[in-house]
Image 1 (cartoon, helix red, strand yellow):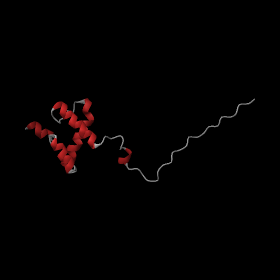
Image 2: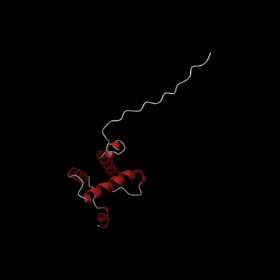
Image 3: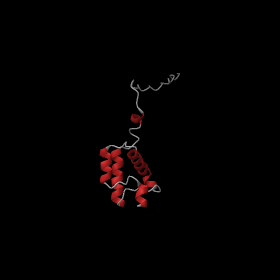
Image 4: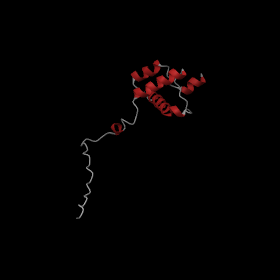
Length: 102
């Protein structure tokens, strides 16, 4: 008796949507939301009593990067007033260097 030939089945390709996906949509699951980072900052402040994440703090490197992006958006007037008010409400320091010198 001869064994039946095993046929290789090609994997079915997933059908793609006809609409293009924007870069923001591609990364939507990879990047934490603004709310999540804000909550992380609030938790950090509850632990430390301040919002100044050190650049040397490896555990909070991504939070420190987020803080820098908020400061940059603020300087460019690109931060919404709601987000600005929320950061102000927890004692966020907009110009860390100026704060250190004063």
